[in-house]
Each structure stands twice: as structure tokens, then as C-alpha cells.
Length: 305
Image (tube, rainbow, N blue to C red):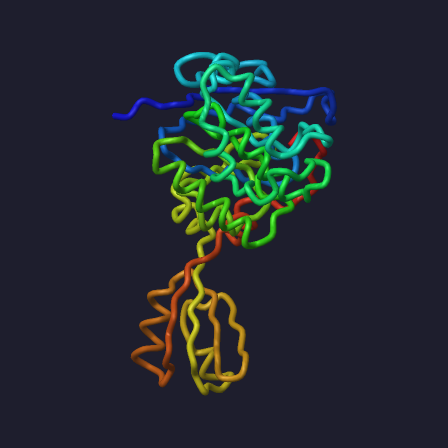
């Protein structure tokens, strides 16, 4: 059995606030992460994602529970270059060029990936002589990504990593992340782009009000929405459509009919054997649907993310 690279056991963290005087941002969370995993940590604002990431990075100390990273404390893992991070917070010096920024941080590390390599991996060569302050938000994210790669980390932590990037840059970024994970690096990321988690995360951890409410392979978490979509080309009457069994709802656009169902097999079987429908496609529920289904939609007390 592979030894866990991160072990979180019963970790809790509270802050002043809330109706009882304390707001529990992270509430009895237990998780383990293995080498080479790509995991999305999802949840609405206030779910505890950023607080949990800060604890993994040693930027915050839990009130209770234990956490081990690379066999020791989070701070030791950071100090020895075992963790690289790309966070929402933390600024760059605006007057330095992109290349100067990477060189300066590299000079602080006892061992690092060659600057030319991380510049290439982060797609920075074309803007290497540009002042950081003149870079767009997405370009600055790529600079931070290069800095995260410098110490040859075993773990990369990403908090909203593609904020400000255009679609092309986001795909290039995740292509690089996939290659990084294949080499054995563990990647943990929090994002509001649910399609990124759906496409790139092998595992999804869903948090709500400080607790983990779903954890598993992304495809399995997605199926917890309990629904799928069956689409057909069918010249059908309203009565024909309403005769289809196991349908939660449907939508008609011209001759295309789209069914939402908890039993896609039953719907597809009926359409194939009892109707003239053609061009049948079955698509599982999206991760966004699972997200909306699993997160209680009620008023939430504000607090740490």
C-alpha cells in the first residue's frame, strides 16, 4: 500500500464570529492524499477550503487534530521545498521583470529546477523582460506558478490557480499540471470553475460549512447527483413524451428531446424498443449538478473560506 503523502486526522479550526461566538471554519476533517493524485477541493464561499489549504501549508495551526505532510510538519515540508504553492493572496514586486522575479526566488533556494526550465513550463519566455506590474492577472498567475515549481516540490497546492487566465491559457496550465502529476507530484487545487474539476481532477473533495460531505473519484461524486440526461431526435407528440417512464423532467427543442432521469437505462430501453426515436445519447449528470444537489441551499452564516 502506498504511504500517504498528506495525512489529516480530525482537524478543526475556529475563528471569532457566528451566532455562538465562534465560527468553525474547518470541522473534524480527516483526509489522506497519495503521491500523484490530482484532487479538486470544492465548496461554496465559507466552506473552509482556503482555511484547510492554509493548514496544509503551515500558515495556520489547527485548534485540534493532527496533520502530517511528507512525514513531518507542514512548516518543515515548506521549508525543505517539499511543497510549492500558488495562492490567491501574496503579491509580486511590480518593478521587477518576470525573469528577475524567478531568478531572485531561485537564489533563495538551496536546490531548484533551472530557471530556464520553469520559465518554459509556465509559458513565460515571451514576457520574460516585462515588468511584473505590467502583466495581466493571468500572466501574474503564471509567474506564481513558475515560483511554485522552482523547489522541485512533491506537492503543489493551488488556490484558484487559473483566475484571470483566458480559455487557452487555462488549458495549457492544466496540461502542464497533468504532466506534473504523472511524474509523481501530488496536486491539490481549489477552484470555482467546476468544469476544471470535472475535466482535470481524478478525485473531488466537496466541503460545506467546514465539513467534508463528499470525497471520491470525480466520476463517482458526479453520479451522486442521482440523475443523467438522455437526448434523442424524435418527432413526438406531448402525449408520446409523457408516456416515457422514469422521467423527472424534459425539454423539447424542435425535434430534439432531452430527458432528465434517475434511471437512464430504463428511459433508453423504452425509447429504443417502443418508439421511433433515433440518435440516442446518454450523458451523466455534471459535477455542477452534483454540487448543487449535495450542497444544502439554505442561508449560510459568513465566515472563513
